[in-house]
Image (cartoon, rainbow, N blue to C red):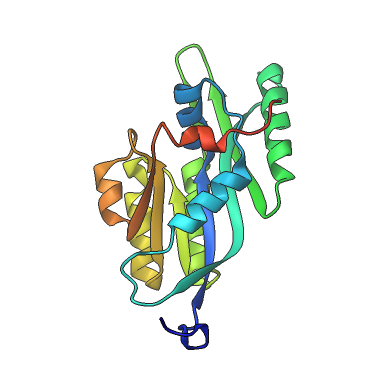
Amino acid sequence: MPSAAFAPTPIVKSWMLFIDGGYLRRGFIDTLGHDNINYQKLEKFIRDGSVPQLLPYRLQLYPIRVYYYDAIADAQTHPTEHREESKYFEKLRKTMSFEVKLGRHIITQKRNEQKGVDVRIAIDMVTKAYQNHYDIATLFAGDDDFVDIVNTVKDISGKQVVGAAFEWNLSPKLAEVFDNYIRLSKDTLKDFVGTPK
């Protein structure tokens, strides 16, 4: 058995996590009926699973920051929704290393959708890759709208992009462009439930 003194020195890479919050919370609500998520446990799970398996050396990820993107309802037209969402995001802002960035939450009788979220993710992933702020990025998203974003990051910077998504809601096109990906099953979600509100 080789001595610990001869163990290869791990190579450290900087890492960032980009979360599509609407996608993440919808997955929890659809599966468990709530979005009471322990984000610190979830972050650790994703970070541990983000080390690409094809690399022939020991790799450690040095977490830089987690960017969480979501949308908030207008305070004037939908005060109740705005107040509830504000409380949720304020609690998340207190989580160490998390930065919350919000787009607009459009609520009408015919639609309930986010605006400006995907664009914020795209800008941050691309600019931070170009500025060499990270070596490896993990994107928690499942829509094929992100295919071009992932390809752009890889093309302009050579950075590696790992995916994290729900196994029942992951675009095959998006899965193909990830360098590696982590699938969350319905059975594992219970491991990331937060304390009761």
